[in-house]
Image (cartoon, rainbow, N blue to C red):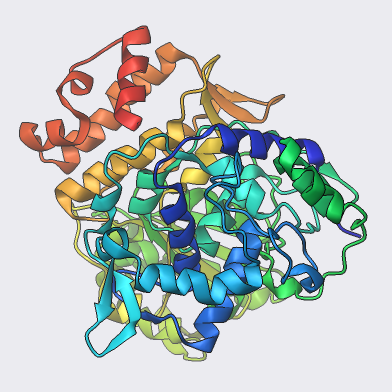
Length: 533
């Protein structure tokens, strides 16, 4: 038995979208459909290919269909561009069945100057297209950015959910469904939250959707034509967005797929969580550790040695004796107690000389290998038992240490953690203010990338998730303006300065001169809003 988005939620999305004015709304609608079909700046798609045409049809149906059943795909006005729902004037009058595989393709391939500024044709096949490298320049001077909460909710207006989904998860699936990259997120969308998610036990009816649109007298006949369509027979459920069944009951948000990472760890035995600082690598390791019986957490640093990890000689009562290191002690415990699950977490694994620290024990990471070691004249066979797993974390921006040796790295499954914009939309706000911290982080990160051309030198979402700002009742991180000012100038700005090696010109190009020189109170908030827009 599933649940569905409520009529109230869908109506809020409709009102938000119809109040948004954008002169590129028709082109963006088509662009989203093409993005779902696989168009990128690097890959051509053939608009005459049958699989591509099916992708175009399904994306149009998901985004614009006013019914669900295939029975109505040939009816007139059976779909509408959600960015132009205030009037039928700029919407096709033909059916989705006719528009998607023919009119859309003809508009793009023969669409004159607007599409010639956006796409390139394959010299060997005029039906194959890809995006121009600078295609976003065509959209310069875009009016209001599209509220992504409203559009992503509209996308799943007919979807069945197994459980209540947080808004951030619906955002994430919207971006994934249309293959939206970071530059496109920044260019087209705003993350200001205006939708309140409510659920109901029945799927909303097509008549309700159509009644929102038919607000003019001339549409009354159109509305009445299918007013009796209430019970919907879903004949092609594969076209609807699929949501993963992850657990969302965590303080930090909803994007962490803990169960998935646990499965990867079970298969790979050892993982490295890698990425920029503040991307919740250690937090994710902590979540996973809750499902283990014994957890050992250590932190590598430049002075951490083979003796600390494997073992070595120490002076005890005037005699040199062998002392076992932390890994050896944990291995022995796991070998003796095979019914319990052991986890070793190595924080900042790249800050030590990893090859020297592991020494000959590197070969044990292959699992199934064994090695004889002697401590105090007692020789024993060591191996990494299946009930001992290893997670390493590493900041990819750390320039004070070298890279991990390939011999080590290839023996770990490597999972990259990037900043999660969507978590901030739902979980973080400034008190009594609708300012979007998500938009701020997205703009800073895009400027960092454009200036430094390094995807690692960005700020992570966890910077904004400070325990002292967490409101247990609202389950949100709520910043006072004064506290956020301190975070910005004492945490975020110094990090940017470090990334830029103190180069003032680079710092100003990222933040702007006014914002870089300390502002306070409402003046800071005004500048942050201007910067993020």
